[in-house]
Image (cartoon, rainbow, N blue to C red):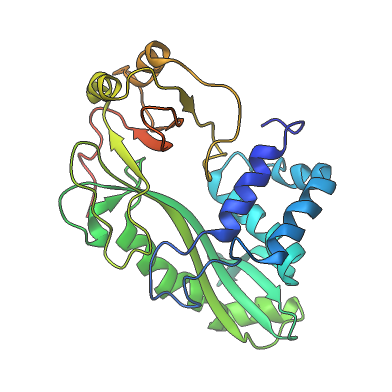
Length: 294
């Protein structure tokens, strides 16, 4: 991660703060935290540019190679700077009978004086078959599924602050009752390349990308000749690409078309005259989708 060039991270911050939630109907609503024409967004971006060293130093903390942790850091920064919410605690472990039963992602002090408990997640899901129900949307590492994630957030993570063990933790933080519970579940959905794109059940947005296997890459290149390709490096998997480096078709084929890849790769195809819209693709290992537990 390059601390000397914060623009991609400022763009990521803007993307996170203006994205709607992945799904409709979750506690707290799914509207973006800020709209693109909100003057608070302008102030946030200006403040971040003027304090870029502090901003980047937060992102570079230990464990911040993980996408989810960086997502939480971006949200926390935006909430504090633009929305007047003070972070009282983040990722607080809750223990019961000497064992950890979960963690509270974010405890906030609202401008109204109340306290809020937010659970946060950024996820990427790939449609594994023709069904649009949540069980058909799998994580790129094959260890995650949309229906399981929603169920855990609703049934375990969010209610944790109402349990005796959770309330005891809040008491040690000087927090009494929680006035609002909210889930912030953001992410990107990818539909199979070569098939009609279908939104997930109750999704706020249609799939914003396509996924394919290495064996399909030559055909993709044939359809997108003379493109410029960018391999997105973790953890900067948020929003559009705003950097300079890119690869030509042959180099993209060499990296993405290899049958030896053992983990998902996120690529952006940059806009050009023939294909003016920027596109996102995830290349998964050839055997992706097999052996996923129910």
